[in-house]
Image (cartoon, rainbow, N blue to C red; front, side, top):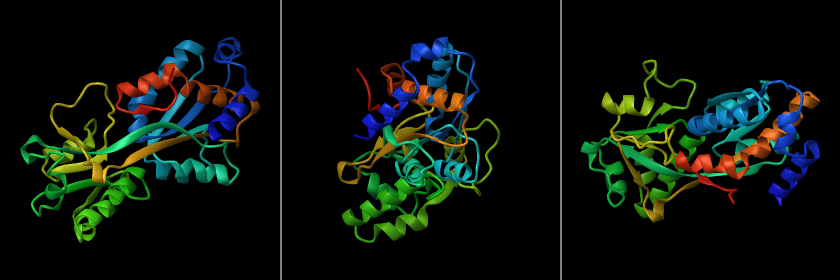
Length: 274
């Protein structure tokens, strides 16, 4: 129902992507998007610009911090979050169109090969006093919230696990006070290489289309599995009519099979395909 409502609004603003290709030049459309979407959305928006001529400014970062910026009058036209709660909040406040599920992800754990991490021994490894755990920052970044959800689930499997894991977790990315990383370095790989952490709880998706052979990525066992729905919405203010229409055309394209197919190459599960 929400998707039908969203598409109805989109279609009332424009008739098709083909119309976008013929329309006069419009202002740049700005997307605020979860950092985990940076690779996939960069590829999709570049593809869209080639097809339509519409310029897109992609701003990525921790979705909780991006939400704060939007609520403090930062200019964004489309918002893609690694959860449903953040865009839905803007919808509920009357600041955005209905929120729809744009993509799905899962929580995985990465480790250096010497850790010997597997799905079967994952919880034992996380609880091992000698294994250092890295996470993103709860509240500032949904990735951190999912890590804390994992700790709560672990408590039902191994009573007492939750406080142990929360105490061990180092919040190294996704927050306003995250440790500095040398320019050009992947934060997770950097903290692994410097032995600050041995494992990192994050997403199964990737910023690249090729697997990272330096680290081992492990799925959670079925009794601890966590899925992540990514929400998308179009901001209602302070756009001009031209920017608003361009934002809706882009949002419609993001739900197209052409765009959704790109998501699979980065490890996401698409929600709209032929």
